[in-house]
Structure formats: C-alpha cells, structure tokens
Image 1 (tube, rainbow, N blue to C red):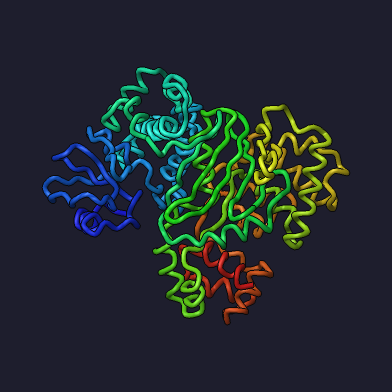
Image 2: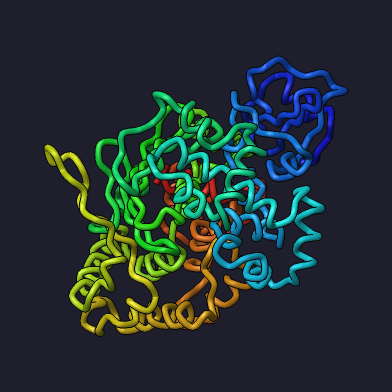
Length: 494
C-alpha cells in the first residue's frame, strides 16, 4: 500500500489488524515502533511516522514495542502479489539467503548488481538488504531466547549473527533490553521442549478457513513425508543446513508451530516455508471482497470466508507432484508418488542428516519419523522400475530433475516467475496446466486460473458459471488479481 499518512493514521486510530505487516507506526515521543493494531493509546499526529518495514523503523533509531511485538506481525501480502525484483528479494531474504550467501548471493539470485539492488530496496523498503536481514535475525534471536534453553552464544550464531557482541548490540537496540532480560521476562511462555525443538506462534490476518487448508493437504499427504492427525498437519522438511520436522495446528488468531530442527540456523527459513505453505501472509478481506462481488461466488465466500491457497515448502517436490498428477485423479497420483518414495528408500535415502530423529511416542500419539521429499539428484538415482508410471511421464520427471540439479531451473520462491514458467513449458511433457499449477502453488502467483482442469470446470458448473475452458477463462477476468483463490473455491465446489 502507498504510505499515505491519513490512511495509515486512520488504520492506527481504529487499531485495524488487517494492516499489520503492511506498515509500521513509529512514535517519536516514545522512541518505539508498533503494529497498526497496537492496543496502546493512539499517539498524536505530530509524533507519528510511518515506515514500510521494521528494518526502516529500526534504522530510524526506534525499538520494537514490547506490548504488540511488531516484529512478529504477519508479513506484507504484497510480496505474494508482486513478482518484481523487490518482491523476489524480500521472499529470498525471508528464506535466509543473505545469512547463507551474503548480499552478493542475493544479488546474483535476482540478477542485479549489489549496488542497484540496495538502491531499489532502500527506495521501497526504507532499508537495504543487510538491514532487512538484520531485522529478521533479531526476530529469530528473540524466538530462540524465549522458547529454548540454549546459551546466548549458541543463539547468536544460530540466528545468523557474526559474533556474540553483534548479537547483544542488536537485541539491545531493537528491543531496548539485554538478551538475558528477554529470557527473564518470558516466564510462563516458555514451552517444555527438547533439544532442537522450538514452539512459536505464526500470526495471520483473519479470517482463516483452516479446515479447507487441512482438507486439501490431507487428501494429498504422502506417507513418510506428511500427515494430518487430530487437526494438526505434520511434515518433514529439507532445509539448507539439515533436516527438520514441523507440526502446525491452526488456532484462534495464530497457527501454533512446533519445529524440530537438526540445525537451529534453519529456524528462519523453516518459518518462512511454513508461512508460505499455509498462505499466512495473504489479505483475505481484500481477496474475499473482490470474489464476493460476483453473485455466483458470493454465497461460497459468505459460507467459507478466508480460503487460502495451499502452497509448498519445496518447489521441486511440487513440480514432481504436478507432473505425476497430470490427467489422473488425486488418489492415483498419491499412489504413484508413494511408490516413487519407496523406490527412493530402497536405493538409499541419503545420509542420516536427511532424517530427523524419531519422536518419543508416549501413548502412540505422536507422528512417526517424517522426512523431506527427495532432492533432484536423489530422484535421478531412482531406477526405471521405481517410477511406476508411463515412460513419457518418467522421462518428464527426470528432465525436470536434471534441469533443477544443473541449475537451469530455479523453483525457489524468489525465482523469476515468468522466466521459470517459460523454461518449464520448454521441457518435454510440461504444458500450460502444469506450469500454471506450479505458478500458483510453488511460486505464489495469486492470479492463476486453470480453465482446462476438469474439476474446476465441474465446480464452475455447480455454481452456475460458464464451464467450458474458453468461456470460463473469459468470465474470470473480473476476478483479477485473485484468480488463484477463485480456483481453490471452484475445486471445493466440485
């Protein structure tokens, strides 16, 4: 959103939580910055400044409010909508690229010089890539301080800081107190967890239709990789520094997340991927308002507000799923994928680092050992008979895996959407449906319709909408820029 003072001030005065993450409120008289929904007394106009990012507020010398915790607000939904360089860079920073590869690595990923990238981020976010990454490190450090018993030196390096001194100085600057004081203040919020286990809340903008998300993920769950049990989604993760597992339980106003990580440096990318999977940074009010303007969709929107687009923690995994799911039922695709995973296990699941330690299972109420989906290199190692699918489809999967393994195809959330789609459809066996499905779920494009999909056409017919590919495609123009969300609703109607 544009940083219009009057509009922002009205949001703050009304404590409108829909704007949390869109901007941050700096109060010059107190030296703090807050969410728009902060319950504190509305500051006077002359004492207020608005910032496009927490990093920009920190750069102005303000510290985070201890009451509303603006650093833990939902992310800005504009990074889902935007496919430009700034949007791609912000998604990559959230995934920890600066911590792992530095600013040169980030610049190389988006295809610009460091200087030009810094200039673009400063112009739009009020802070450069290092400051944005530093703000994220501070939030990661706070989570580790408050939810684990790790020593401060361990937390400093796990959060991505170069030294304990840098960690101490940043925490003092951002939160106004020393790390040890943060830990002393956590009190009853500390969770009794084991080594490498972190519990936290993932905020979202309400409403959230949790059942729709869990329904979608449940019917597609792959044994050994993911499962839905008792209202909680469990899955294994393949992360930059090792393996992990997560349990996600939707609750009122947040999603409770329990992460088990082989390497705590993976906390920030794990959180970013879980948020992306559940589409937690979306603006459901804006989306539903657009779709509800269509009389055919209005009853469905009223009955099920807050429908999200289930996304992915691994772009390559979703691409394999999409190829195998071409022109077959969800059940059939799941069966074929299960056989592929079993064949991969027979070849060898990689090193022990590819798996998280098994859960202790008192009473048998915990899921078993879950792992991330095989890498491109591991899929290439599966023999012909392990694929259990027609030769053409098997070779399409292998062609995809080779392109990813060779670095010719970037399926990460910070990739160039248009260029990635162009390269996808250039691969034999991948057509518009598969590329569109990936754009929607792997790349986070909010404006994808799959008009040739049979289930979508059935859903359209059930709602009294045009149900041929051509007529539905033309009709859906007035759903822009939220056609991906209409697609999920049509699937549910079917």
